[in-house]
Amino acid sequence: MNHFALITGSYGGLGACFVTIHAKKGGDLILAGRDQAKLDAQAKEVSEKFHVTAYTIAVDLSRADAAQIIYNRCKDIGILPDIIINNAGFGGQGDFSRARSMNQDMEMIAVNIETPTRILKLFLPDMVKRGAGKVLNVSSTAATMPGPLQAVYYASKAYITSWSNALWRELKGTGVTVTALMPGAMETRFADASKMAGTKLLHIP
Image (cartoon, rainbow, N blue to C red):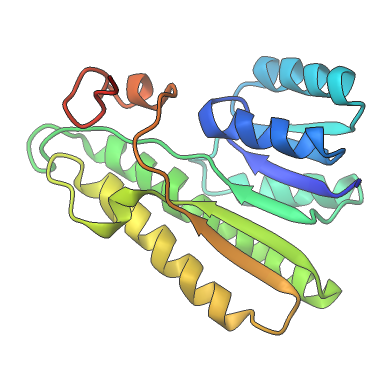
């Protein structure tokens, strides 16, 4: 197996798990995230341990041009990913109208919704033309309910699930599949990053 997987948010939590699973099977990687040093360290580790090729793309996924940067880099190295895993995302808590700033929620929408949408808008036509490809969009069980004090996060995951299911139907017969992964609370750095560690929701005994 030498299929290339493009994985956003590759060096933390679920992203690191996806990288290991794919590399263990002999799959090559395109690792995308904000921190070049962490990407370099991850690429070096998986390359040496599993003897696979790993490219890195350092980009702030809250930027409107993040998806275009990723797409252009893949074009430059001559690779159309066989697998795309839209894993990057973050949460946060607080009253929507009083506690959370405009920037906090707009950045969350950019990372959780806008960039994954832009990535597939760019890559899917190429996958369909090739007649093969797999997409995994990381949603959450949060998508199934409203989330007071996490209103935008829960809504962003509802978008990912609905969007993924619609794309799955649109792409039937093309050779390209889209799947939504809906994990529950997990013991990753997500809780700390979203300042939710110690809350009842993310209390993991």
